[in-house]
Image (cartoon, rainbow, N blue to C red; front, side, top):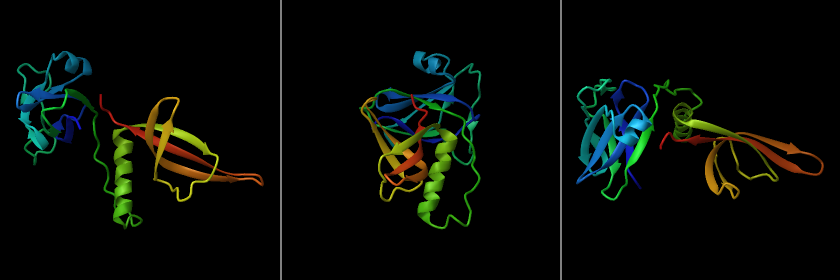
Length: 192
């Protein structure tokens, strides 16, 4: 599965590079301001360690002479981040972009748990990921395809499979054919 960050609670809210690696029998977490610093292991802002596992809490300690002072983004929580990993995982560097507090989703339209979840996932993706938009024309109709469905696109040319969310669907009919035109978006994680 590999190392991962499951919660992030660092102030100031800015671009951060988090390097996670093994440190003997613990997970070592290092905080940097740039990818180059993380790669080279120089100008570290703070570091900390925790046990292998899931949702392991890490409280970072500032490096002496660091140019940025960190604190808790949410002062009710007493950790800077939660991480997951095992002793067989390889070193990984994550790019954490500034995040936003989104308005509460409380519209009357969203009465079911399924709709709330779909809307929340869409809002989180739109505000925290890079979006790649695609316009596609299908030679046939796909029964049951709806807006917000996940569409898996296989590209033999690129040798890649991507998951996309359907934004719009337009059915085009002539006396000889019936086709489906749609737009979809692929959300890319900010992970190196």
